[in-house]
Length: 392
Image (cartoon, rainbow, N blue to C red; front, side, top):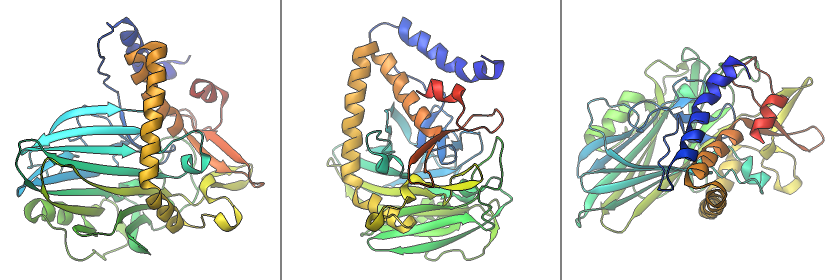
């Protein structure tokens, strides 16, 4: 094993030894990086901090992929994800659990407990679902002090998610879909598969944020301060999109923002969710040919022709897929715990998401599924034996 690979795997090895040597009592794993939105080597967002509000989420290469989360409780604003607005107090993080297909955070402030779940349906027995580049973010709020509280929630992601570097110009738009409010962001130039090597982020295709229509839901595409400060101070988003585009991603950091007004929240939980998706159009250049992502393959009448179809299918399947993820996680964790104990199970849950996220499921020219792995900071190779072996 090279020194570089040893440096990558040493933290995991140390965690393994610690778990094996620990007492049978409950082990609390501290992941070196917490998986948030992990699908493939390009759509891969992690928290590098012990608490979600201590820093911005990042791409696995270390580049910032800012996700921002706030809650207003009885008119007072708090942060729970990301570091802006910097003058807001942070909710107390009281829980973190990494499961094979889900990451669950819990926060408390102002008499309210807020649970945020990132669910990525990486179900190995269903390639159609596994291939969908869609993660569900679900918030659940409930009062903990026997009183009702006015609760509003905020989410945004910056245009950093659609560029390799922040100097690249970006554009954005809205997509009309029945039952959904959908926002779209992408680079202006769309250099599809134009770069190779390491330390690269995707700068083609489009990121989509979709939220079910309903009362108390609002969306906007605008600069980061306009959206974040507007919500923190007034509990409302700006009433119109910013149309100054294209512009560099770092120019007033354009964001796709969503706000939920939950109304009065008591002991009964109130939940909301959104879809975060990335349509890369073309995934891999293989032997002189471009390969589509597997979810775009030709299936006759059932073809998912574009991102709109993807979002509608994912929205339709939300409840069923969350239930399937829950069942899969419970069964796999029970098997892992039986095989090696609680610490072993937690390590495997983390490794599951890492292994899935190191691969991309594509479709060959003759319609067969083709799964490619990506090396991390080596020389940009894909599908090498020394990656396939540990992933297995």
